[in-house]
Length: 300
Image (cartoon, rainbow, N blue to C red):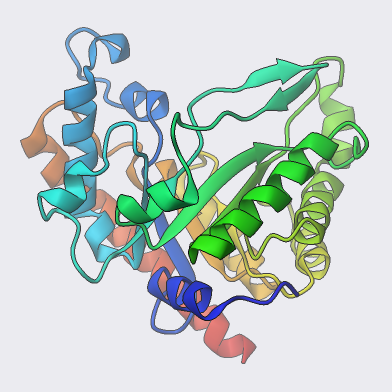
């Protein structure tokens, strides 16, 4: 297990429930968040940066502040929600360092950083922790050395700055890979990503659901004691609830939930957002929190 520093332990506690389960509202999406605001008169492309920032502010006000922590991006939401007091003092802030989209290099996806983002910048924005996304194919280890080296570099830089880094890994289907072949290797790609990331120094992981209880247990074994949270990947809430329960029973520490919470609770109208977030999204969040804490209590 990669040991946490004192500051990192404090940050992990900040983004966890009182029972110790990680639970973070993921709201760092940009184009993905615009896409669910289906009542925008000029469509997603017509939503301005300020309108998106307003939506993120309302999402924080009516949903994120009910969670231990929220994940936000510096492109639209930050530092506004800190400076204007929308972020509650007891709500943890995770700052996304990754830019939207990706590059392609020799058929493999490569993540991009938000311009100017560093561990020091995370601190300056008021962050308790940072999150960086990397795309990774664990079955192409030699070709992915640049990714693993970057994980090691940023993990060390964050530790030196006293910033907890959450390493998010997304695996993906190759262009010439059949659906059947990808489905066959998917569970091993998730556990392999956990193994490689931990070997590179990762101290907290955000991972896709590997598909089954057996696969989740394999991820936990590969993580070698490093806490990991399952991401929602846009599935519906009921599906995500089942995935979270299975993952936590089999060793996960919690969840980072985005679209499964709020994809049907956003609108171009602030009044409509408040209504939907408080009546739909908040009960879902509370259900996730109860499940995570219940399972963790039974694991002890």
